[in-house]
Length: 289
Image (tube, rainbow, N blue to C red; front, side, top):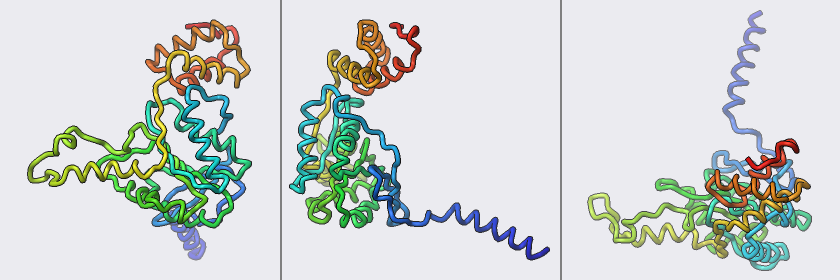
């Protein structure tokens, strides 16, 4: 009886310990197309994503110039030629993240793989590169909505990885990042007027500014995205309606314009959200509200 009680208590303790300990490190599923990197201590785990969100290039609108440059850079990378890490910045909802997802759809058969890394996991980026460096695939490390606040230090690990030697140390890896901030770091008015003078003031304010700019400076290719015009927004709506095999008639056009007006935004994201609503309605409900 005492043995049975002891085994029960031991099992309870082991179950609680199992919840606290990091998962057992296993060989990644190299047959997957997309992954998520999660830090564990000074290393991490590369988890496969079985159903990555991708779609054809034809679904995008109003980003032809940015697309051409990103595609060219990616094709250079896939062909074994030199290529740059990429920083995409600008207005929200204008296709920055979508462009990266499109690349996976278009180039997965040529060996392209996508790895999503949150900014909190960037501190273990060197460990990830060690795992990837001898693989035959070409990997894009994708940092979505990247920005850093004062006091965050994960950006220093990213600077180290990007500092002119990423392609030399790991030729099959590039970093593609998106952000609403051009320099990825908060900037303040007093940095432009010499900084605050005082006990805790920055003695060399220009050096503090240089520290912030130096992170974005390590991305060789910058792509800027801008708010959509009305025609560009409607083109995005039409593209997504075609994906659902729905007509872009006058009723849909009017409803799409009303949708954008209520949101106070014209963008690819707004177009996608409208089409999700429109496609989900019953046919008799597809009227301009």
